[in-house]
Length: 127
Image (cartoon, rainbow, N blue to C red; front, side):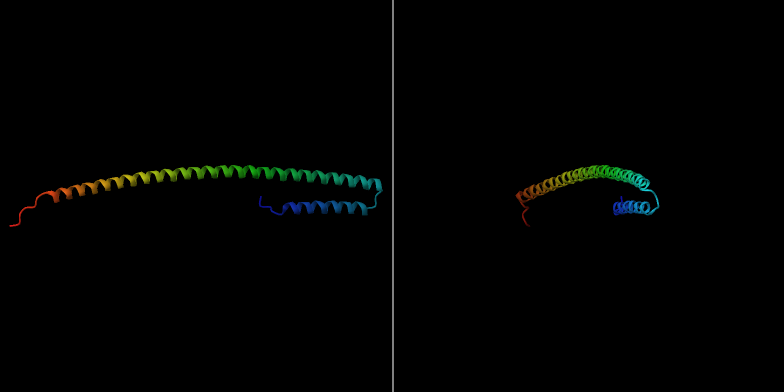
C-alpha cells in the first residue's frame, strides 16, 4: 500500500488510452458504422478494465483494513499483558516494602523497649 499516487496515474492512463483510441478510430479511413462499432468495443473494454481495477483496489483496501484491525488487536493484547505485568510487579514491590517497613517498626519498638528497661534499672553506685 505504498503506491500513494497510483490511483491518479491509472485514471490518467485510462483516460489517455480512451482518447488515443477515439482519435485513432476517428482519423482512420473507415466507414462511420464500423468506426462507431470499434469505439463501442474499445469503450466496453476500457470500462471492463476500470471495473476490474476498481475491484482490485477495493479488495486491497479491505485486506489492508483487515490487517490493520488484526495489528490493532495484537497491540491491544500486548498493552494489556504489559499493564498486567507492571501491576503485578508493583504489587510485589509494594508487599515487599510493607514487610520491610513492618520489620523496621518492630525492630525500632524492640530497641525502645530495651532502652526503657535499661534506663529503669538502678545504676550501680559510683565508687
